[in-house]
Length: 275
Image 1 (cartoon, rainbow, N blue to C red):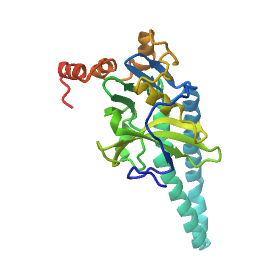
Image 2: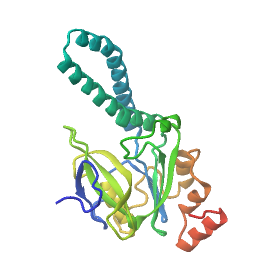
Image 3: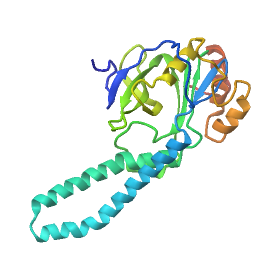
Image 4: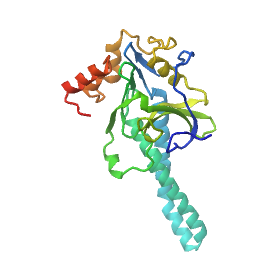
């Protein structure tokens, strides 16, 4: 049965239901939680280094391929090997597409993103806050000008009710899967945005992060707020490590701890936020 969310995301493996889970968190992506909000990082240092090296390797291999291809093309044309010429040309064009749509964005994302790109869930206001590299998304083709802005950020506020989890498969022989949040039009299955929640996890059943967040949002007992990198009384240390210096708007950092929609509205009014 296909996903109910449209348009369907590439590599879709299954939709995830919302609701609390009895299974406690066995994961190191929970950075901090208190009675108001929790923060999960999406990039751990080892993954960031791995994918940075992978993207650099692909880019260097492509550059070497381009360097030697000119002489090869010349030889094929002189020998009138047009069939082989067009096959090799197609391979070059395909390689160029992979580099432009995957390797370059992956390099930019990992080279210019730091401190895990945390995503914040406030259970008292039902709001979700994202501050991440503009390359931390699901676009395939980008305008060339975007590569001139390596540190550009995507900073958004979402409603938890409009976010729905799905599992996608990365098609590798290692059977890695990822949990993605589909941002839908309110009350519909029409997707208007995507958020990577839990990248590159072994096995299709690895939904501990999704389950813990669902439990947290409804105050379920399995979501222990002291399960994270920092205990609930270490908010200052968490913010110094994960939040400070990362371009989070002042109003949004205050909104992490808003205890009601009325308090959130007051924070936005005080900071002249009209969204």
